[in-house]
Length: 303
Image (cartoon, rainbow, N blue to C red):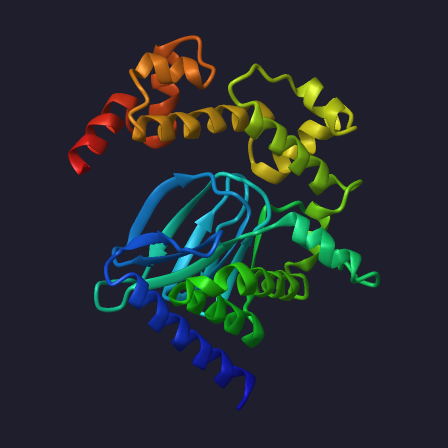
């Protein structure tokens, strides 16, 4: 069987499994840690999101994901979006309907696993054909990568096997990603002493301390970069300044608290680090297109 035939066969298997898990539109966190699948039947966008590093295999349909300051990334059936760092993005779903839904499966990227694999690949070559820093790339999924996703999805129906077999298949998927055109990007974010890794470390600090005041000089010093160099590289990677990114982290954390009925708008604002609830509401509407009060109202109506 040719590689193309193997890819088509595995994609058809993945489609069957996802439809079985999701007979209707939605997104599902499976019993396999870090593994999600989704079904989309309506053309359009779900708005801005801030996901952890992930790889998403498009099993059916086509999709466009935009990152601030970067060109939109278009991908379709049999291709993967590899997002190497937590970065704001907006996804647009193309060519989908109830009869022909868009289907995908995604897996959280584990950088400890990437580092473990790199330690076993001493001659791993990083091809630097693209000098521009990017948070994500699109790659063609190999037949082996698609088949590994199918086997991981299939474990959902044998939960007793997940603790033993899932880590092995997840490692296999990470290996195939390193061997793909995304390998250079992933290794740069994993290995210390290079700019992407330094930026990733600053992002991790921001995520853990979003509710605190942040100063660019302190962030730069933390990752051993000159403030001007850090600022330039950060904006090149994320299309925004560190302070703008910091604000978005606060707003995404606030939205999660609102969904959880944490408390009043003022309490949520103060919890995520805002001193002014009115400024919080203005920033919230600017990012999400509606006020925190409207968010709470919509969530209550959907409940």
